[in-house]
Length: 121
Image (cartoon, rainbow, N blue to C red; front, side, top):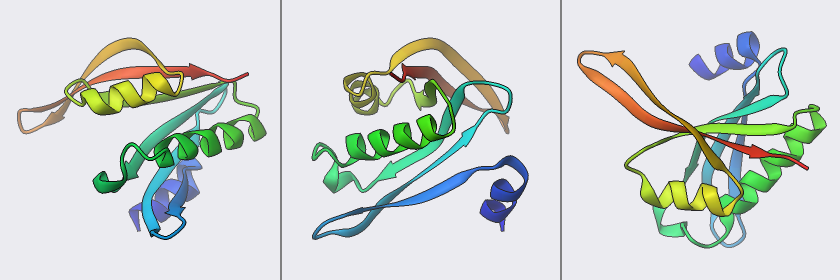
């Protein structure tokens, strides 16, 4: 239900990531921020056993192509500051850190992230 609401009310897209010989291995969700040239990647999940095989890079490339179709010139995402492996992977894919963002999500919990961006050619 939550995904259907996001798709209907915010225009969020969801895609399953599949890899030959493995089947479904992850997912990506993204949305075009209305009135901007930004496509924001909300979530990018990939089975941990398949990290480092180029599947995540292919998913980012596929998402970049969707962004260009939507006339977006930039991809953005947020990544936890402690997730060094993901930060390195995003940097290899052309993302740069724009800013640190700390968001209170209630009950004494915070999301301590970097907002990253990739310019699309």
